[in-house]
Amino acid sequence: MERARQLDRLLRSRGTPFAFMGGLAINAWSIPVPTYDIDLCADLPEEAVPALAMELESEGFAPPSTNWLESVGQARFREFSVNWPFQNGLIPADFFVALDEFQREALERRRTVELDEGFKTEILTPEDLLVYKLIAWRPKDRAAIERLTMVQTSLDWDRIGRWARVYGVEDRFREARGR
Image 1 (cartoon, one colour):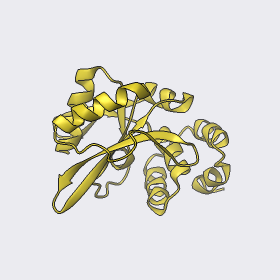
Image 2 (tube, rainbow, N blue to C red):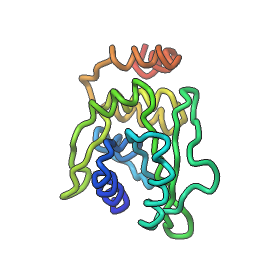
Image 3 (cartoon, rainbow, N blue to C red):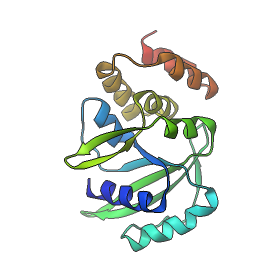
Image 4 (cartoon, helix red, strand yellow):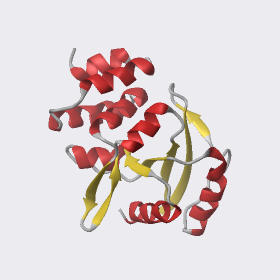
């Protein structure tokens, strides 16, 4: 959690709107499971990524070894990763750069929660997390969807469905909704 706090402080000091997503956010909205990596979405112009990566390096994170930005998934989200040493390996912090309407809207809808004692920060809403998980659709994403939908019983399924159509994952949406 200390690395999440560190990223929170750094992005706030830069005035960069952001929200944690992935395991940290899923755990805040559902049944918690262990998570080590960090995923977040940031409203960050692509040209600002190299300077942020260098600043992160000065904070103890290892910058990406290849491209600064990579396209990921069928939605072609833009992402860059930095790592930090942990035990005998490296743990990633993945930054999704908010470039499309969904990502920007998700950041506008973010919520402040207490992720750990004394650590209040922004995370994506359950609905927006579900959209990301529907797009990724790995076994761990399907498990996260199941945990989230068991706990969050008043989801805005219309919003989730609208973005599922935009990203072409309506079949996954129907499966996640139980139809």
